[in-house]
Structures are given as C-alpha cells and as structure tokens.
Image 1 (cartoon, rainbow, N blue to C red):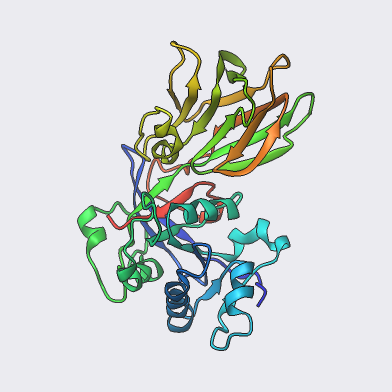
Image 2 (image 1 turned 120 degrees about the vertical axis):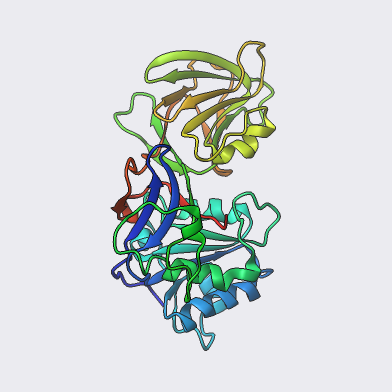
Length: 349
C-alpha cells in the first residue's frame, strides 16, 4: 500500500547543559508511523513479522517497510492492512512520513537506515540479531517493553526539564512515561566537487566513514589534504579515510586510528598504510571543513566509497567534508526532529 503524508510526532530531547550530552528523549505527541528495517534475506522474517504485528495491530501504527520487503513478503498476504511501502519518488521525503525507525539485525542495518534518510533522520531503536552489535544494543527478547517506552514515553512531561538517570529509568505502565535514554550519532556531509565546477556534483551523508583508496592500481595514491583552504599534508598511501566517532571503532581503528567516544564532537583523519614516518592519524574538531584533492600529476586515479557503498572511480575531484550540524542544546529545549540531520540512537543503558 503506498504512503500518504500525515502529521508527524514532535520530539523532545533533555540535555545536560554543561556537557551538551543527550540524556533523555521522548515524543510529545503519539507517533503515527514507524519504519521497520530488517537484515537482508528471510533469516529474520519471523522476528520482523512479530514486530510489525505488535506495532500495527496492537498499537495502531502505520508500519512502513522497504519496497523489496513489501513485494516479497507482504503483498497479497492477508492480515497486514497496516503495512505500507514507498516509491523512489517518495524517498527524499521519507522523513516526513516516519516518526521513528526500528532496525532488526546488526550494525549494517543501521548504516543502511542512515543511507535511506538523506537529510532529516528520525530516532532509531535497534535490536541486535546480526553478527556485529556495537550500535544494536537492545535485546530482542524485550522488544515489546522497549518499543512501548518509545511510543508512550513522555506522556507525563508537559515541559522540558532536566531528568536524572534515576527518574528516566523509573517505569510506569504502559511504557516509560519519562522517556528513554539516547545517544546522538554524528554524520559526515561529503560533497563531491568536479574540478572547475561551480557547485557540488553529489552530496552524501555517512555514519561511519568516507574512504579514498588506490583500488586495484599497483601505485600508491596521492591525496592533498586541506582544512578550510589551508594545506595540511600530501598523503602517499594505500588510501585515506575521514571517520566519525561512531566510525572510529570500524575501519578507522583497523587502520591504526584512535577509538573516540560517540559524544566527542570530532572528525578522524586516518591514513591507510601511509608511506611516511611523519603522517599519522589525526583527530580534528567538529567545526573543521576538510578538502581532499586528487592532484593533476597523480600517477593513478582513486576510488571512493561512503559507508562501504556507492564505490566509484574519481579523478581530479575535490571533496569537501564536514560534520552535520548538531542540534543546539545549550539548554533543554523542544525541537522538531525533522530538522535533525544526525542520528538519535535510542539506548538501553
């Protein structure tokens, strides 16, 4: 069944002003739509059907699923009138339909959800049923309780106030009326600029990292690094990556980069097997705007990929990378999550 645009729920985030860290999250109004994403294949079909049935049948939510899932498992199947899907033309406005996202699988499912939402990103709650579980920290055995916390959280919060950990963890029925704990995960905005062009040719947001490498070439790649137009270094290496704190535990740490707490606003610049004794991984502040250029005298072209996707050849291309804007949380405030470009990941801690 195709989607129709409806009113979305407003969200509230409670922060600790001194540190700017998120502590509590709740929906001001009841959610209307939820997107459920599962790992590829039919291995998790039964848990997937349990979740959508709980959300759609028991709590009267519109359940949005991906087109290939709808066609393969739900179209023509009786008993799922609450299931909807979307067309390619709806993809850019997907955040206007969805109030929060449920991921079933491993970390790859969260990366996939980040790819689906190009700009505004709804809150994500993830259940670990995959091979990697750095981000998917919810136990599927408790999925009904955890989802009720999201749906009914904040029903007793008339205004934004600072919440202590003890008050957030206090439970009322149905669900936790004082909200749930969250972690804000930053994304990198990567713009591709063709040499001589007047604007970006392509813009991609990544949750883990952007990687430029030499591909199958026998030569090392040469990449010039700039920060706001100021030359930093020329890197001769197998490649170079720009990672978020979330991505610091992925490819970056395997290449020798540091592990960074997700609440630290930073960009990681990590070379891959550099042919140099002086250039080593660097942690830059979140306001840095980096440019990676393939010089005209490079011995080979380079390849680029974003969160392991959209791998493509680049030649003489300027790349501008910066963190998505953080929500302004110097004091507790109400905001619409449709203006949020990063990911609010619901935690069970």
